[in-house]
Every structure is written in structure tokens, then in C-alpha cells.
Image 1 (cartoon, each protein chain N blue to C red):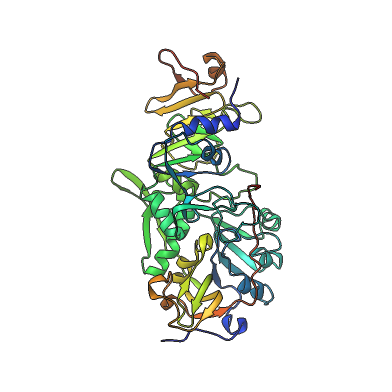
Image 2: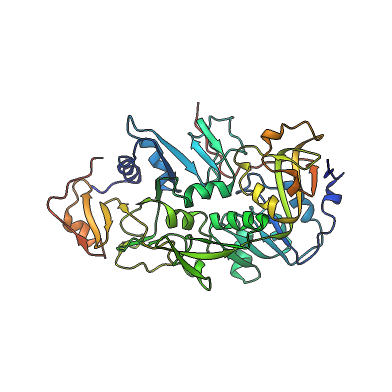
Length: 232
Length: 218
């Protein structure tokens, strides 16, 4: 067993620097690496390129890094719900690359899987296809999308073991397994960290080979963006 | 009378086929789930990673780890499954999801759709819409026939940035049901009490009108 456990968030973030490219798992606020984001927002690192499906809200998630103007460029599929984001984007301070959600997921998966590029129909005929190679397969045009990798990928799982194996819970899984594959250094934070051998190998979603560092998050707020309920 | 949003959803629900997988977009499409006809079984996919989506949870049972693509708290039904975003879009791109219902700002007579960007305004992004429209076998658009200025959203050619080309199969609006054929929009049904002329005058694109046009059953 190769031990991936680190003692604290400080060790988990060792080596993060300005101008790096980071990936962040999560969809909306569900399954975001809260502890890593909080700690990064307190570090004096700037000029970051962040790959994340969304950009958090003003006072939670990646909104915290936006507030301190640590992010130079966002690569996302949907970035509403964030006034600070809008302000920085419209003023030109923040560069934004919007890409279709499925292409974003597959580009991360491809990055981790050693596939440099792939053809997809998504975005053909739209401004997403500008400058991209187009090829016809089965009578249908497709565009060439390239793989994404990151200096650090920050992911969040429900349970993990000291070998770095991860199990997600509910729709908090989303981009986390794909980004875990695409990080040169993948930092996983979990709600529960157990010794290797305690998780059933059949139930593991992300094999520990993709994870370089794992730690138990100190605290999880797990905010809900749209609380929709039925009255009893 | 022109249809309200609930009735548009109700009309689309009549098109649901038994034992199929369906993805519903945000807005009017979400309401379709409330009108599934008796005897029809459909499974709803949400592109953030769930198939077999159920209703909203009871108060106190909402779970931050269980949301749909609109970031709303949800529940799952028996047989449901959770997966990552790459698998989710494999279902979509690989055409395993049979029907996509989504909203639009404009639809053109060759089936192009615009629904993600208004130049000069804040751009929020396309989310999963481009992947969905590029691959779905069947795409039904749910929208109002005209925009807030009263201008037709059913056009010869889209004026806003495109989300996908040649993809929309059918449009259900507050005034009409239209099929996208290779010759353009074909008027299939009209809202109860709405005349063909009223539909024509609210529509910029040409309409193919053949025989009697029945009223929608809503």
C-alpha cells in the first residue's frame, strides 16, 4: 500500500504557486472541495487558471478566490449566480472560457486517460467551434476538443482510505472522479478517512492511483443553492 | 386562449413515450414531469449525474449531496442510479437518452436553436445544452411563441448565437405545436380558440399548413 494520507491541509497544499492551473470538482455547490478552497483563499497566490464547472457564489466556493482576485482565467460551462464574477468578467479583469458541460467532463477524463484530443458533435456550428478542426463521422460534423490537465486537481469525496481510494455520495460525485484523473497532483479531501483495507474494493469509485494526497476535511458546511421541498 | 406555461408542459407530456429516458431542461420543461400521462413510464435523467430522478424532498429531508442540474434538491426513485459527469454525457452523446425537452430564445425553420447567449448581456454559459442538442434523437422545444417585445421567436434564421444546428424536431408554444420538417415549420396544432391567422401573424417564419389544424387537447 502506498500511503497517500497527509497530516493537514498545509501539507495537502504544499507546492501550490501563483499562475498555476487548478481543477476543482463539484457541480454548483455540491461536492466542492470546501476545505481546499478555503485554505487557498487565504494564501497569497494569484494569476490562477481555474477549471471548474461553476464558479461558486459570492461568499462560498470559488467566489472566495474571486473576491481576492486570485483567479486570472476561468474555464467553466456555467457561471451564473455570482455578482463578483459578473463584475470582473464585464470589466475584463477576468478571462472566461465557456465550454459545453459534456465536453468539459470528457476533456478532463481524456487528460487523465492519456487521450490528447477527441471529436465531439457538441458545439458544432456554434462559436465554440471557432478555430477547431471539423471532421465528418457517420455523416455528421464533429469538432476536435483537446484534453485538459492541471497542476493541481482538488476533489472532494465522501469516504476515502489512506491508499487514496475514494467513494462519492449522491450527485456530489459529478466532476470529481474525472478531475481526480487529470491532476498532476490530485488532492482529495474526504468527510471520513479510514485505514486502507476498510473500504470494499468493489465499491470504490476512484482508484487511489489517481490521488497523490488525501486528508480529512476539518469542517463541511455543504450549502444548498436551491432548496426545493414539498410540504408534508 | 393562449396556453400558460403549465399547459405547454402538459401538451409536451402527451408526447412522452412509454419506457423511455428523458432529459428535462430548466424552466417550462421541468414542469413536464408533473403531467406524465397515465400508463406511461419515463425515467428522468439530470445531466449532473442522476437517472431515475424523483420529486422534491419533503421539508427536512433535503440533502446537499442530492441535486438536479438546476441545483435544486431532489429525491430518487427505486431503480435510480448516480454517476459522474463523463458517464452522464456518454448517455447523452451516445444517444441513450431518447428525448430532450428544453427552452429556447429562438428556433429557426431548419431546426437551429439559440438559447444560451444574448450579445452585450451577461453570459452565463451553455451548461449542458450544446451537448444535449448536438446528440439527442428527439428534441422538443418548450417556449413562448413571442418574446417580451412581442417579436416572433419562430424564425427563418436565428439572430442570436446558436446553441446547435439542425436539431429541433418539434416546438410547443403558447399558441401552436410546430414540427420542423425539411421544408420548414409545419403547423400541427393550435391553442384552443387561437386562429391560424393569429398564429401566422405571430410567426416570422413561413408555415406549412395542410388541411384542418386541430386544437391542442389541454
